[in-house]
Length: 195
Length: 197
Image 1: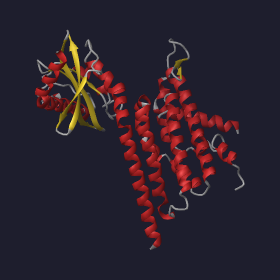
Image 2: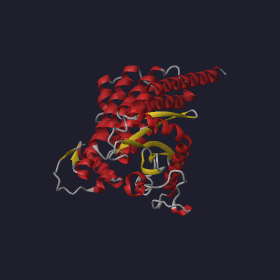
Image 3: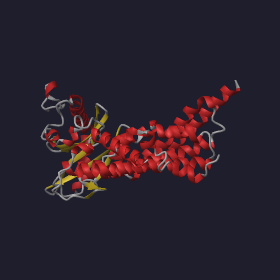
Image 4: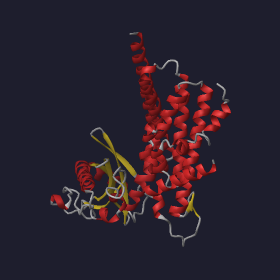
């Protein structure tokens, strides 16, 4: 292992930022980012699942048999997803009402399974924690950025606060599904311009 | 062979552990979730259909045991007299159960108002049952003792266009509410009397 823990953590924030660089996990990225609040909520939920599943997969990596590893990963991930769902229902019900459908779908988010398979199953506990946290925070930031842009243009508010005043005519297109694709495409384009 | 046993054991232990953990958590959060639902979903629905009530219907609630199901009833006080109860019933919709809060006036057996609470219907089609106030307004004044049906089934409710299954489910929920109401009416009247004391 040439890389340090810090490097494993920071790679998720820019170099391998999941939705933009790897173009993974697009279902929630496009589906829930109609407002910034939704994006952040979804991001935090995914980060929690990612961190916990990475920790557990890494801790159990010598016990989990090679042939049934995917089944084991899915059990671990699904367990944490339901934990998130129940806790969110109990303590953040309005957020749950908005994200409801997408929370169970974290189970099949390929970022979570991808990190378990590609990283946590092969690396130590601390590295897996750093990896999970980094990728998760990167995912949250991407969702927040996309949600922020779509919210400002689509409803004229930023994190619930009005930006342009009452005379602003929102581009409703931006909060619908096609707007999500256009917005994601433009952000990918900008990121590539920076390189 | 050893590998096979190991696979079975690991998977079994993992699944059992996860099942146990989730069952525990579910029990632990059930009360809190019910409270949240009451506040954010059922609460507003109850307030809407019992508009103008002089009491707080959410605070004034009681439970009646119906078979082995415990049902919550919310009472509304109008003109100084408690005469209306609201309760939730369910119908099978397109994307799962649809919850319907139904308010009934006890002396006339007529529906005062209905409001969809929980649902997982398609946005823009089935979800209109909750979003379009015109749809639920149709139920006002129906007798709770008769089955409620959409016009396609020779009933009186105009279905939401493109969402017949959802409309039928809401009608079914209202009909179910009628069945529960008729079954529990004696107990309900008793409880209401206590409130009027």
